[in-house]
Image (cartoon, rainbow over all chains, first blue to last red; front, top):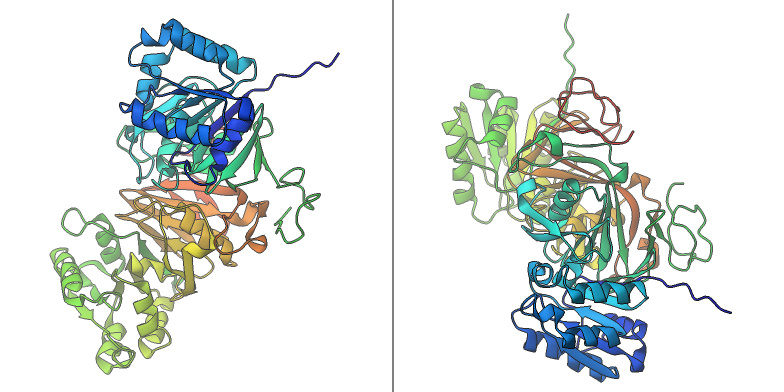
Length: 290
Length: 290
């Protein structure tokens, strides 16, 4: 008897992923959802334009050969407990949260029957994806809204409960494109979470159990606050600038991996990041220091 | 006999410093230049609008009571060896590089007589300041131009020789406001320098010998590459994304200090950042881990 271990699977996208070209990220999601046998549910709760947003994904997934693609649009919490919605989730092999406003996702879906159903499917190994607002909702605490292109301050970010698929971290999206280092740090310093992920546009972090792999055009910027030796969040007021000493910074593009347990990046085709002579890595890769 | 040790003094400003309000940063420069006895030379080489740019500073410094303020505009390398320019530098107690295009500063001034004269005054302890383009030129290798709001890639930044007042580091300006983490990392990975400073607008790092103090509205973001365990710069082409593992990240607002020799931030009114119980720091400051 073969016991297949069930692993959690997430495709967390920084927004603006390619839908008309090679669709690298959507392909990865679809492959994990069963390829041409996939039954995809697109959740448009985040957007006030469910038809336009949803149809882009229907077109893309149908072009890639998904067996079934349907939109579940939920305008109200009642919608989110309808038998149609629940049945769609029950039959889904992949669930995709579109972009829009992340507060709409949580206010409409959180603690409804559909939320419960999605979490059950997730625990059974069904892949969940989200882009932009749909990425923001992945942790247990999410960035509800905030200012870009500014230094860290408490007032620049509002936090709220997320959908809880990847608890214990903070996620931000459109990261490089909108200059959100200050926002990510502001969120991180306000939460018990000490691991922050800033995902660029057309870039995704693909979570398989406790391993993350980066795919796409840009990079995932990881800020690990666990080794930081000082911050001033307890001492300051909302509009005063935050300080942090000695956080770890990793910037990981396509093909790089990160282990959520060890909190370390992993060299492409290699073992552990900190190995002085990484096994199996390209000889042209530069490994510095110890 | 009292032997006074001569210390290097720099005021390196991230651009858009206040000139009409409390002028915190310009005050600090002026104080270091001798206060009301100061003789200030404003170098407008960076800008094609020397009159407009220069007059803003004349007005600000005169309002703060500087004894003498004059603009030296150098359009050509010949201008930069004129006796007027040299005499002005000879009598200056503070030299200020305005914003504009940093390539103009180096192409017009570098290796001229005025460059030599400014360096001699600098070595004698005269304070040198620069804002925006005038900040960019401070290291020996400068960011000539580059893209903001993108992940690190070789192609997004052009490096060139700087004026060399603060060798061995990389400086970027308008840092948070223009989302320049990717640009700073791209510059850092291409240079032997492994310490990068991203200075926000209306914010300055004030260098006294080997100590930096941050003043102003935003923060200085410091990326220390020296502990990084991996990067991929040797293995990739110009348009491919850069990776880095384990750089140190410090974000220091007003009042925080950084020691260039130990490469460590210093707690406000305290000894060393890594002290578990910082001496003399506010009891409300949070010190995490070891």
